[in-house]
Amino acid sequence: MATKKPEIITDKNQMRNWSRAMRSLGKTIGLVPTMGYLHEGHLSLVKQSHRYANLTVVSIYVNPGQFSPSEDLSSYPSDFDGDIRKLMSLSKGVDVVFHPANLYDYKTYKNSNDINDCKRSESGNTGSGVVSCLEEKGIGHETWVRVERLEKGLCGKSRPVFFRGVATIVSKLFNVVEPDFAFFGKKDYQQFRVIQQMVRDLDFGIEVIGSEIVRDEDGLALSSRNVHLSPEEREKALSISKSLFRAKCSAEKGQINCKELRGLVIQAINDTGGRIDYAEIVDQESLEAVEEIKSPVVFCVAAWFGNVRLIDNMEISIHN
Ligand code: AMP
Image: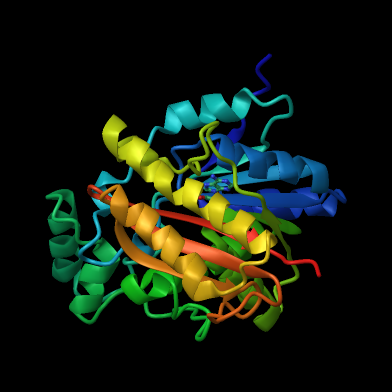
């Protein structure tokens, strides 16, 4: 049975006023930040929020600040009406969907011609984000949150502006929504750790909750980007989760040498024609690479299948 339609708020002041009014009534608020095109992975975060908080806000915002000029912001999938229907299909509903048009403020800058140029080039589907374009011209949003060490490895190597964009927009969402709890999927493990660290370092009074990866029945980690995989590519992409599960099994049977375990996963992905971006075994806290599994680690993989870059990971803890 469908639950009631969430209130849709697009204005950040209205969003903040709603949160403050609810908090003044003694309600706690859970925030689930998303870029939309929702799937069961996102819905699992909403269900987590129901367990922790009185009220739940889901934000839907495709963040231009985390796309570099070479990445195609314009092809990111979206289906706002479908997202609302999915949220309403849950047994307990969502109170607000925060869906701002834009969270980077271009209006205050001097040269409106430059801003219009950037907006025009974006609508021409050049793949260049408006924010990146404005930055190249030396104007635009100026304040960025960087989590200096954690943002560097893994995805940060091939996506140098990604975590800066994530940390900045999540800070803004925290400042606007003022939640008590925020929910992040461990599917994006590095992102989860970056946000945890940021919350600690900047004293946001928010509890960050990490949620387990939701997979399709065959093991593929759910992702909005999976829609871009052809059926053949999707089949091949199973090599990521299958080999990660095998590596976890080997480690639990005593294979703690990370070079060996990485080799297993790299070969499985290469054999199906996937192109590896990275396959690293890192400490769960520091995200530093380890040579042997002695403390809890996470085996993180990013690989391309066709034009689609997928990420997945497996937490591994050895109990002696
Ligand atoms: P996105 O819309 O891709 O930015 O993701 C929004 C949130 O959903 C992030 O915290 C992701 O980590 C989380 N998420 C995405 N896919 C999954 C999944 N398969 N399982 C659990 N959480 C997920």
